[in-house]
Image 1 (tube, rainbow, N blue to C red):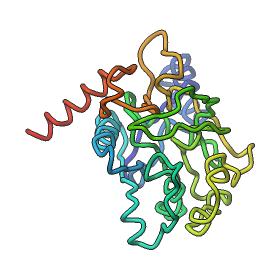
Image 2 (cartoon, helix red, strand yellow):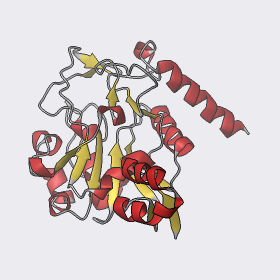
Image 3 (cartoon, rainbow, N blue to C red):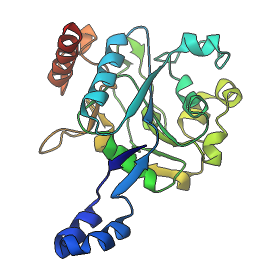
Amino acid sequence: MILVLLFDLKFLTEFAAGGVGNFKSAALASRSWLRPMAEPFRIYVGWDRREPEAYDVAEFSLKRRTSIPLAVMPIKLDELRARGLYHRDQDPLASTEFTYSRFLTPALAGYRGWALFCDCDFLWLDDIAGLVEYTRVPKAVYCVQHDYRPTETTKMDGAAQTVYPRKNWSSLILFNCDHPAVKSLTPEVVNRESGAYLHRMQWVKDEDIGALPVEWNWLEGWNQKPAQGTPKAVHFTRGGPWFERWQNVDYGELWCAERDEMLRQRRM
């Protein structure tokens, strides 16, 4: 078993006020200062044959900054079809291969514990352990609750840009796989239900949807840049530097630097 130290503000405040003698009471009040992690935190990342480099950089940036064990796995449509988990017809409005298959994350995780899904066009700039802290409050799911209304008509490599309620909520979802609403996402449901039902999270009550700060799914071209530092996770939702059309985007230089470091390490 691996013991992961996770401190929160309440613990640090009480510890600083009381010193070493107050360590025990502060720790008990926090209940999060020392948490056992018996297995790696599972992250499922959408994979698309048009942008494999985006996936590689997302995985690399996650692992490069983590302080906890991770198991990062691609969601590949061909593999899901081969396993009999996915058999939807191709949707002409689907902009990626994982438009619907992302909702198989709980099934892939065995409907137990917590698991994260994110799109492949993410650049992680902070430790994912900070996101895992939200699992202390057992909502069904957590996501950044965007009000995203893009004005472009196309994105990425010419895919149609669509606008709908709760757009981009499903681009990063922290699933509580033990929750009954999440367990309702069976392969049968994922293959049968509409995009609106799945992406607008009609399968879960609103009060069971927890809100994450925007810094964990910062939408390039939409969200305002922070006054200091960087977002914790940049989402190149319109398209990133791996597409010719999207070379000059916010934080694009950081993505390119991350890719270059990944390639450098591969050559070693």
